[in-house]
Length: 330
Image (cartoon, rainbow, N blue to C red):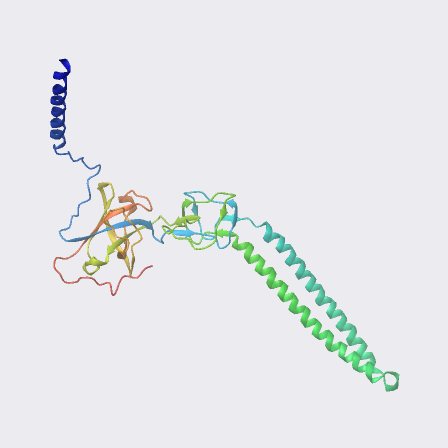
């Protein structure tokens, strides 16, 4: 008797729970407030782009011309270096061994020159003695010709030994050059921004490029004056006005901004390399890169940080771009 009333009761409870679930599911989802408000352009007509802070002389990616183990690291992140200051040294034990061999080869070649010159003097003396004999019957013509040939042979031997000295000197200079190439020096004044090597690690030789699968061994740049590299989409290039005002907002805080001053334009349109992470962003986009300057004291930011850039453009559909005559790069 109890079972006959229990089953309908459970059915009614299940139906009620299903209705309650549907009602709750149909309620609108509250939109979460953004962590930071997006940047807003102060201009009525503008071009928006993404900018990246870099050193004025661009970020210098330091690599190594020769592979090998890192022997000594002479700098750390944040160090100020001058041009030709030593950055790091690659293991040079095998080159030093070859250097000793080349020095010994040079000494042997120089000794060979002295030996050939001594033989030459001896041959000259014997020839003069033979030619000073008045009675030709005292010396045969064959002996006289042999002594003359010895003089010629020794002259050629001296030339050959001097050529070997030059070859040994060139080989020694080559080893010295290789030894110097194992000492990587700063190509310009600047600050060490990043260090990706440690003593004992193996340094690969070859070109380095950020964002292309390989990391530079060191990154340095001059931070006394910073640039902002702005990517302008090729569809907006015709609207770009080099004389227009530009404003940069720190990404993540639109209350931090600074005006920009045009430094120069790189008139070669290139594929976009700096991706912002936007889901609608296409990697096959081509962009015009424009360099702006700003006062670092007005915006506390780091090299490599992204900025939201707004560039004012005139109203109208006519092209205002004067990129055919851009400002020259320093």
